[in-house]
Image (tube, rainbow, N blue to C red):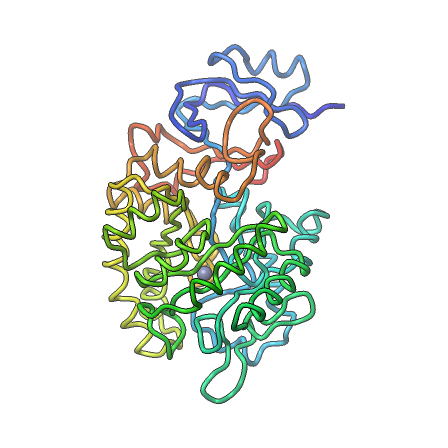
Amino acid sequence: MAEKLIVAGAKVFDGTEFIGKRDVIAVDGVITEITAAWTHTEKSAEAEGAQFVDGTGRTLTPGLIDCHVHVTVSGAGRLDAFTEPFSLKFFHAVENLRRTLHAGVTTARDAGGADAGVKAALAKRLIEGPKLRAAISIMSQTGGHGDGCMASGAEMPMLAGHPGAPNGVADGIEGVTRKAREILRAGADQIKICSTGGVLSPTDDPRHSQFTVAEIEAIVAEAETQGAYVMSHAQGTQGIRNALEAGVRSIEHGIFLDQETIELFIEKGAYLVPTLQAPVAVIKAAEAGAALPPAVVEKAIMVAETHREAFQAAYAAGVKIAMGTDAGVGPHGENLEELELMFAAGMTAQDALRAATANAADLIGSESVGRIAEGKAADLVLFDGDLAATGLGALRGQIEAVFQDGVRRR
Ligand SMILES: [Zn+2]
């Protein structure tokens, strides 16, 4: 028998805008109908054997999409990765995925770490979690942000590679082409590269660029021939420009932006995935006693403010923005803090929600998620209150229910 779900009378944000109070009906995990509010009642639902959810005084949004997570990573600066058994991170990932889903994130893009096995476990429903688009490995030049070679000569376990997840370090056109092919062979949905240094790596500077434009172009070309695309970790201005010139689809972090670079985003139609939560999480972790080198903490403090200003300038100029958190650097399950931070930085509630729904779906190339419309997946989040009126300042405390493919997950 068909499984029917009716969410009645909630104020609906459809992925693009607040459309007023509606009833949203889903059958077997797919939205089939959106009607005037209270066309359905608890009684009429009972009569047709449907699950009924009262949306009075609540806001219904599409399931949220976090475009930058690392589900197999559990905390910044954890030296435990060097001493833990190799496979323990996958068991941690089970809990990380569950927390992410319960936080209202029904789809996520993993920016390195999760492999095809994690995706398969989700697809088989062995574990619960968001629908996952995995980058698997992190491509980096020798000595770049994704090179896990430490000063001691030891390899950082997360970046070292393992069967099904190639070590992402490569150089030169031939080298990066072959590496992109290896990562796509391992089942990557998109290729993650680093075109600048970063905050967590002790020896490189986030303002320095990594990979040449020609190398990035070769990776983009290889990804596109196989129906994929490239996301680039890029913080410094030159590395952002190089990645945009070469045709990457999204810039991750994007901390040092100038007006010229903002215009290049618009010219190329590229997305910015700001991850405002990431430097905040590094600072919080350091305050809580995490084993982080002082240079890393100083870098995080420096970039937090710059990052917010860059985000504001890009938003004001009309750059396409998609929500991402870098969860894994910070705790999993606090993903909606990113929306709170975007809202606090001056983004409207509507635009922030759009960044986490329709915009994010367009970025990851999904037709089925990110919108409340007929034919879309019944991935839905019900929030207490009227978000159009109150804004997103306390969003994490307002989650009432999370549905994925029409099934209640929280
Ligand atoms: Zn990341």
